[in-house]
Structure formats: structure tokens, C-alpha cells
Image (cartoon, rainbow, N blue to C red; front, side):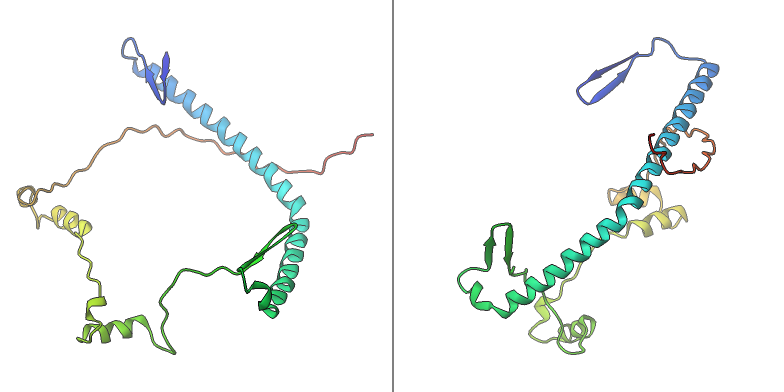
Length: 189
């Protein structure tokens, strides 16, 4: 029996179950998981049919929107006086305008940020604009602990420990779901 309190489900088991009962429950879980997969496969097949039926119409609509948008943008760029007072013009069915993006740093000509960093590091007045980031190399510590380079005591001295938690799992054995063929719907007579 299960009771629900807000977002938590509490299971009430009166007494421990036997191995046979656990095996039956795992069998039920596998059966339910297979039914779930079959329903999802059916749902995916139905979605695919709908997407295929609508793809051409959507492509035509997207193409028309893109072409019309390009024409309106060309008009806006050719008529900057229309945007002299405000960056947005409100038409009856929508807004047209220009947005100012957030500032970003770009390199000049063929320069790269790596080359510029070298110049900054060399002691120019821009040295204060170089960021140094320190972080603990957790992967290396774990690898060295596993290799015996670092002991539990070494790690404890710096308030660290390596843990490897165990989690319970149930992995139902799933059956093959045959591919479904889709056929066009028959017209009603």
C-alpha cells in the first residue's frame, strides 16, 4: 500500500517479502516497462506521420515568412528616417524595428584572442585584464587516490575524502518491439 503526502510517496510494507515475491514484482515491472515502451513507440509513429503530413506546408510557410521579412528589412534599412524617434514602429499586425545587442569584444583584422592574450601577459598596461582561474583538479585527485599516490590520511589532512556511493536499481529486461508499418487511412464510404 502507498500513501501520498504532497510530493512524497511513502510505501508501507508490513513485513519483508520473500525472494520469490521480489522476483514476481520485478517481472511486473518489466511487463509494465515493455507496455510503456510500446505505447511510446506507437505515439512516436503517430507523431512521425503528422510531421510528414505537415512538413511541406510548414516549409512553404517558413519560406514565405523569410521572403517577406527580407523585403520589410530592406525597406527599414532604406528608410532610417522612419526610425528617427523610436527604434520600433508598431503596425496594425506587428512591430518592426531595430534592437541594440549587448556589447561584445571582437578582434581586429586577423588577430586572435590567443595572440592578444600573449601581448597582455607580456606586461603591457592591459595586464590587469587577464583573468586567472584556480580550481581543484578533482579528477586528478581521484586518479591519484586510486593509484595509491594519495592516501585517505593525506586527503583527510586537507578536509577531503573519496567516496563511492552505491545506488539501488531495477533493470527490467525489455523485449523487442516490432516496427510498425503505417498505412494511409481508409476513406469512409
